[in-house]
Length: 392
Image 1 (cartoon, helix red, strand yellow):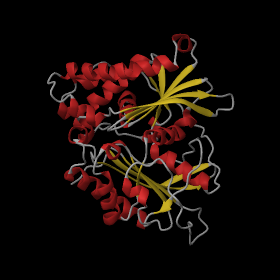
Image 2: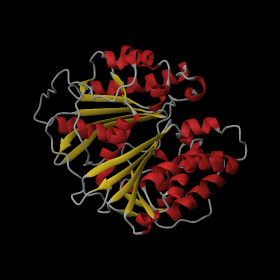
Image 3: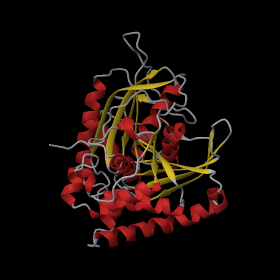
Image 4: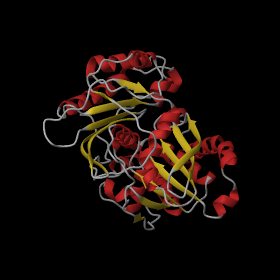
């Protein structure tokens, strides 16, 4: 039996903010030449209009096929935001072995296609939903990406687009920008399975964002875990991964952020990823993961350090059994913790805003805005993470 991520996909009405609009196609369109040939940062073209048999607003759907997870959201416009009416998430590890071998292995493709079949089945329950489905680092890197995209369409009817790092960062920022406050600069990061994206953002007086520079590192939780598997001692392995990420970030940080800006309190941080939301859930002491308690929370750096220590001292069975981690995420947590720690090393702020939202929410905003729906920033519920015990 395949396991589902312990992170709940139960969403309340979400009103993310963001940038330029894009359009999407319905689920059963044939793959275009661009889809079959490889990389694309372009939007899908709407092949058919959205139709509904009732007075309900139209439906929109987003699929994010990453190196680790396959995720689906189906939503409809609601007031100034949208209400999620269906969702799905599964760990598929599509990027397993890609960095070493250069191609997607058969077992990984089978897992991803099985998950996409579930998505396709769910989408058939919502006829007329306008879909955009994207794939990221694992497919960008793989030599056999075109064959995989074609096979996905043949077996699921889903037209998968492989997006470039800039588009991936734009979508993540669009989903998270509602969490930004009035401070003039921001670091927004997304720790994925195959890559980690960092955005250096300027925020104007009206709350509009400008991405000054984006860094996409080919270092996500899955590929780092594989690359450092030869180091047996956990803390030594953690510190080696942390050092690599810190070294990769130095030039980017020195170009875009000087110490006086940090010291003056002009920089804020938003983090979106399973790593960050897991950290927040542990710090909050949740008995089960609850998205509405995590999304928009303030996570203090000292609490993040405490969670790091807890994780490094947890035995494998205890990590697998933790309600905010789960079996399939457990072995990836050390790599996630190392990336997260390196980011905090480079930008030594006091807190960050935790975002349980990402590419799917960014895609939904694009699709809805393209059809003229007003999607405005949300009034995010604020949570403060209390200090936790250092004892596991």
